[in-house]
Image 1: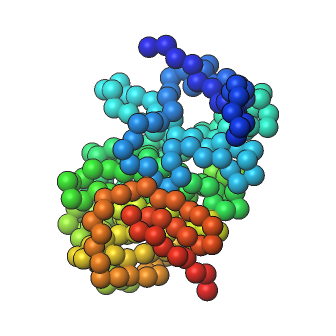
Image 2: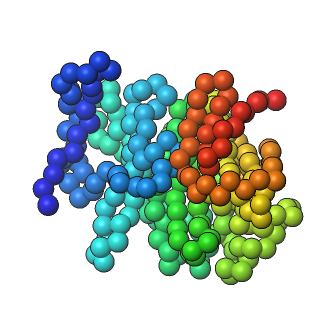
Length: 250
């Protein structure tokens, strides 16, 4: 299989694409991710708030042919700078318990924090037909430190996933949301889950403070949309899980 990889710029009014960076040699053994039915956060690549850096999830394949993702940043202001890898599949495995390690995490979305200081990455594992295991991690751009929004690594058995989390009446399961979005200001992760006919919106600060996300709002409805795509707009509007949310900061 032969291919080329490049970053191109095209004017809003159209015209010929301009090559910004040729990455064919740099990523000779990796491919950018594409062709997903469900898109999480801002997708599998996103520009930093200042427009100077591109974050992208790249896929490689192990000796058995299984796909593995890694997170990279690419400086768009210096054509000679090398792309930097911030996280790989082992980093994505870290916040998962031992019993979930047989289900390799697939990174399926990322988003920059509003201040450009960090990136949130979502990874997904299929541990059951009705029990997707989704973990969100925050990567600090300055020092490379990776912090899970919720750390599940201490769960010794799969049954613990359905038991109450420490200091909460809610099971661990609710902290693995169906989907998530960043707040309009980009300083919080908004996690949406739908269990037992109740939709709940959990909020976690960015960078993470180490506490379990708290419930910001809930409603006794069950859209059952299965829609993972999220989007942020003006005036506090956020779309997640097929719901239009109006976010008010207090």
